[in-house]
Length: 310
Image 1 (cartoon, rainbow, N blue to C red):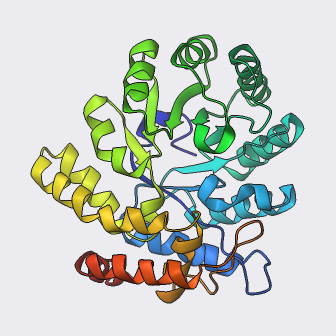
Image 2: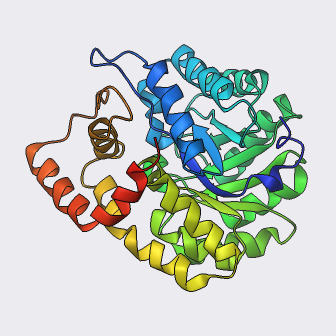
């Protein structure tokens, strides 16, 4: 829990893991442990579970807690661990966040409550309740309006960060790059910001972001980590080279709804036992698989380097 006391150390490429299932659709904790080991071996700077890529809304609360506990045990303090604990219901969010704290997570990633479309004041009160119930655990707000139909306004982010000690940062998953800038400007007092948009991971670093929680790291953890390391070392041309080399893999992730195609690739690579996704998602279609193969061909050199990590 070393990172819990200083969340500013949760930097770099944070992998938001898929949640593996068996062919029968049950939680596959063995594959989940293998993913953690592979990610750390590849140089990933941190691990997350329970964000959008992890299909949390298709799981029971007990399953989500089991996944959090499994990852916390597998990580064992070697890198930062961020647990996704948000839900559309406050009681579930509080239960998940408390479980994450008990499991040893370094921070909780709390998505805005989806579907209800609360006002900014309602969002403020929501996050204040969650943070107040877990005052020793850093809370990271999670803004992803494409999935929740509500956006945390920059002024609300700044207010929450200013008023509540353990609200330390935000994962911004919006393609509105101006929004990133407005959030950082409005807070202006040490707010930690991570990108959740793949092609904005590198640009956000130039604005003052401290890293990214990018689905691309599920299939290209080495490249994702190296991009950050090159940037921080001042090797900006090398960082940009990786940024552009990752384009086909970013496109691959969204050929069909994430994490469908990520799981397809991970199964093919022998990283997980099954590419199973739970309803309402469906397995990759024939058309989607054809497109995935084309994109993998474009990224073949990069993927060969990823295969070197076992």
